[in-house]
Length: 255
Ligand SMILES: [Zn+2]
Ligand SMILES: [Zn+2]
Image (cartoon, rainbow, N blue to C red):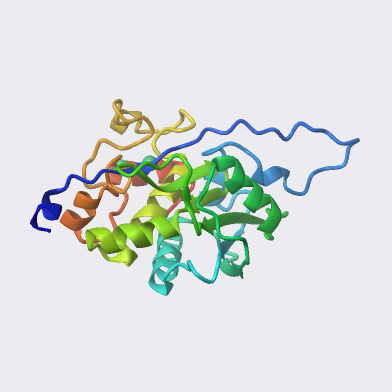
């Protein structure tokens, strides 16, 4: 077993999917109540960060009883939102425990189908809704050496591969709390359009050109390797946004 401590285990942190929305199945003037939540990644950053359009926010956590997020993760995420987001009407969390068959893995289309079936909170007049699914199966694209930990795939939707995180936590001897927090916060950073996802950040020159839409500051939450096992072990904490990323968020109405 001595060799395992030198195993170079690469975790593919994220895989941003730029989703061009297919909400143009127009239906005789009837407005799809989900329309506001079917936009592409990064496009609702301002609506989430500021109170210009939406004065409150609802965060829906969807998971199965076998793979729930840790309470510490929920509390930490709530703190992140309170630190960065301006919602004078408040931020509410809703937990939605679902029963779905055990699968080996999910393609992104299957992840979207789960959202379509089980998401219960959608953006309304004053309240923007965020959906987070803690997956009970790994990503279909995973290989033994490369694991997807999370994916932000629409303006208000992200998946955290909770089953994968639990396995990595055991195999790599890393706190599950750190893995969950780093993954969730990093993916949420992509929902907030970091880095320069919508080509309008004020500090565009901190984008890592070798790893697009990531930050070139090594200790930043939005660094491409912020969730590699070795990085989490080195930092020992869930990373924060660095000052350049924070300035980008503030330019869009965040705190
Ligand atoms: Zn990323
Ligand atoms: Zn940064």
